Structures are given as C-alpha cells and as structure tokens.
Image (tube, rainbow, N blue to C red):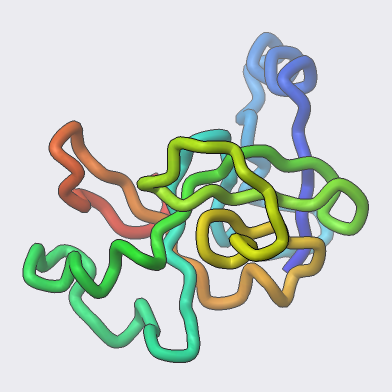
Length: 133
C-alpha cells in the first residue's frame, strides 16, 4: 500500500483546475484501493473477525460487526503522525494506553490497514454500501 495525502488547499486547486481531487490513475501505476476522509467508517479485521467472511449488509450480523467499526478521526503522513481511528460508538477522546485498540486505533504503518473495508451507513446506522463510494 502507498498513500498520497492531499491537503484541503491542494484539493481546492485540483478542483479549480478541473482535475479529480482523488488521483485514481496514478503515474506510478498504483491501483486505487480507497480514500480516507474524516468521519468515514472502516471495518477492521481482528483475530476473531474477518469482514471478508460475512455478509456486511445483513442486519443479523451487526452484533459481530459493531465492535470492529471505526471512523477516521485524523490523519497525516502514515510514517510520522499516523492515522487515527475512533470506535464508531465512542464519544470521549480518551487516549489512555489501556483503551488502545478498543476505543481507538493509531496506525503508523501500512500493515495496520491490511484487510480493512470501507462502509457507508445511513442515518439509522444501517450499512448501505461496501467499498469506495
């Protein structure tokens, strides 16, 4: 995996030039996987849960999915400031070490992003789309 961080300023410049904000046809031949924006939701795999093995659109599986859904809280360069995800039900910004990987995830390498699945939910919390939108 490779990342390309686009600042808000760069996004505006690209848009004003008639270019796509997200470069899906990269000159280095990278295949586009997904974009990350603040508050988007991702399902993370765990030792006991693989999102590839269950129907994510089936409401009967929500009790299995819920502990593994995180929203993008903040991000920068992956190697330095990292990507921060907060559990989708978490309202407090408590970053104590004991809650790491429970209420929040901080990721500093591409390995931490392997197997994640981007999802979109509606206003009732139902998963309505899987993958990039």
